[in-house]
Image 1 (cartoon, rainbow, N blue to C red):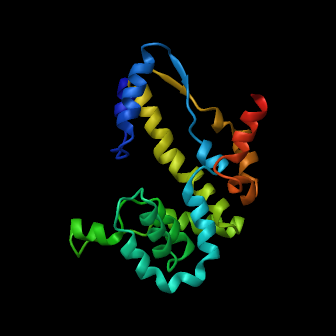
Image 2 (spheres, one colour; image 1 turned 45 degrees about the vertical axis):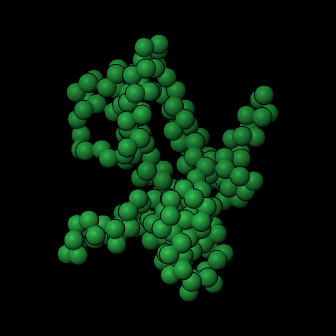
Amino acid sequence: MEGRAQGGPPFADSSALPTHYLSRETRKHVKVALSGDGGDELFGGYDRYRAMQLGRRMRALAPFSSVGAKLARGHPKSKLTRAGRLLASLSLSPGLRYDSYVRIFDDATISALLGPDAEFPPPEVAGLFDVEMKRHRDPVRAAAATDRAMYLPDDLLTKVDRASMLHNLEIRSPFMDHELVLFMAGRPADQLIAGGPKRLLLRRRRKEA
């Protein structure tokens, strides 16, 4: 199992480090644990989903995207920076806009690091988003579908699998039940994000309480 955890291509998500330590400590007490992976992607938990909806409504502000780029230079978690990123992204196509929300470095920063001759492959996220947008005709549902197809299997689930198996800890992800995934994939955008992140899931928890 240890060999399995260490195999495969390099993995660059920094959250693998706390997941590694959490798995190590959890294994001292149990052999099997539950994970909440999939909750955000199924129940509309990410702010970027709301940003995609806002972007559709704010397209008239696209000429001011250069102002947003200047505002987006502060701390990535500050409200001003996030507002600037949203404004700066309005000049992009929906696919490239979503791609910009899930990236850490923009093209200008990568060029500064690698040199002006660096070549960039077509963004996979943008391409997949465009495919899902044609199918769902809604940016929120397209964004969630993109994450379910790429972010979950290529990042989150891989991270938890490698970190947990390194310590012989079995992880179960109840949100990844295929019937639940199919059911939530068919929910309209308003059910996913109206009323706040993961509203449907929180309502269920309150009823059970």
